[in-house]
Amino acid sequence: MDIKTKLGIILCMFASLQTFCMAQNPYVLFRIPRKTLDIAKQAPEVVTQTTSEPTSEVVRVGIGTVGFKTYLYNNVGIYGTSEIVLCDNNTAIKTFPANTNINVKLNSAKTFDITLDDGTKITTLNGPVRFTCPTGLLGVKGLKRAGNNALYHGAFEIKKVGGYFNLINIIEVEDYLKGVVPNEMPVTFGLNALKAQSVAARNYVLSPRTKASNNYDVVDSVASQVYYGANTEKSLSNQAVKETEGICAIYDWNLILAQYSSTAGGYTESYSQSFSDPITKAFPSKDKPYLIAKPDIIGQEPLNTDEAALNYYKSTPDSYDVRSPYYRWQREWTPQELHDVLQQNLPAQSATGFVKPAFNKGDTLGNIINIKVNKRGNSGKIVEMEIVTDAGSYRVQKELVVRRLMTKSGKALPSANMAFELTRDVDNNLSDIKVYGGGFGHGVGMSQFGAGFMGKELNIPYNKILQHYYTGISLGTKPLVLSQSNKLVTQHFYNSNNYAKIKIDNRYDISSLTVKLNGNEQKIELPTGFGGEKRFTEIDVSNIIKQGRNEITFVYPSGEQGALKIYIELVKRDDNDGIW
Image (cartoon, rainbow, N blue to C red):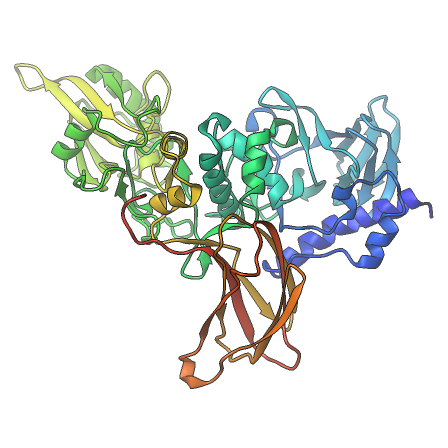
């Protein structure tokens, strides 16, 4: 077997095993055995990216078609910017030169036909089909993102789903983030804001609100977070990813759900007032203590009445969001215009389950008599509104449903942070409906325009930006579980200050723990007994960590039972309301 075939097998096995290990235990960072690495390194053309051990978790990203129209394919063309390796599951089948388009088509027997553009048939595979490009990037024929050919780090997996297949990018988190951050936030917002965005995006992919599919964790569109791949990377955003490597936002020993949107409008909203429960669909949903309504300006009263919301959104008070083109906006309809809009949109929005009673296709909407807001969040966001007609009333819940229902010129409203100003004629009939609004997006968690203003114009560091928008958080490495089935875990993280503490939850009275930090190995004796009083342990390692990139390995002791939960705190929780 020649060295290229060996290398192909190595790469295909890596993609499969990494995915398997992550599925079995989300805290495992799979590492290629040293012997396998030595074999790979015999190939002189292999670059560091291929032969080095993975340094961050691996995620699976569903890649959509042009315009993100679908994630279901029946055929696709794959190429590499350098030599590409075709694999059937874990077995390397063949290598192809750079820029060779390899067509994959699912046939009637539900196997994969592999052909070249000239019609030459290469083989038929059972799949999953995998592609790697050891010294370059992978591409999809005809697919562009942000005007560029879409190119990707990592590996591709093509996996069947029904009579179609998904195209999945298997990629390390830190490489994935390089293709997310500059597409979620303009690099002109500056390094501080980009670092905050990097942490929020890292949290989001490691702990998404819902898993996008059984075949992948997230998708590459706004349905998760925008990921356009390697061809859209920018040097400043790459720096932000590098200088926050491994750092996540943590609350109560867990990763937070780091929601963010373009513009909060000066006042963020609580999670429970914007999102339904992802499983039960109950709305309002349960509160998340780190995602609570919060004004930019301390002392601002809640906007949960019509009067307060109208006064706020008709004015332009000081806010971190003032640079956003959607900080304030207005929309206006005649009664007939709004009637037609509602008549058209109500059936689709009723299908969400958040319009009651349901308005079905073919139903007739009566004349609009009134529009009432029954409930607002503290940001003034509409939680429930009521459309009153001479044929009946309809209650509409949830900000996204409100926005998609009340369209103007075919476009959804920027946000549901809005107040109505109704004008009536001498007979008390509606003659004009005007909306004063603020913000763009759901308004929960970090406001990207707010982060940009804070970071660039106020020079607020990224940790303070994050702690403004996510109440009560600390920053640190992703909490991991060390146990008999997961005895050794290595993490990498970037440090820019002189503070670091290893936090240990010793629920099962483990007697010791071995830690290797930047080459310094130490066995730590852990307090046990005391009826749970010594369950939590902190170990200050501020004098051992270094400025820049650090590596830490945790080793589970032999002969023990139970598990340890561990993370490294790098920024302490700050309960102050202000950012200074």
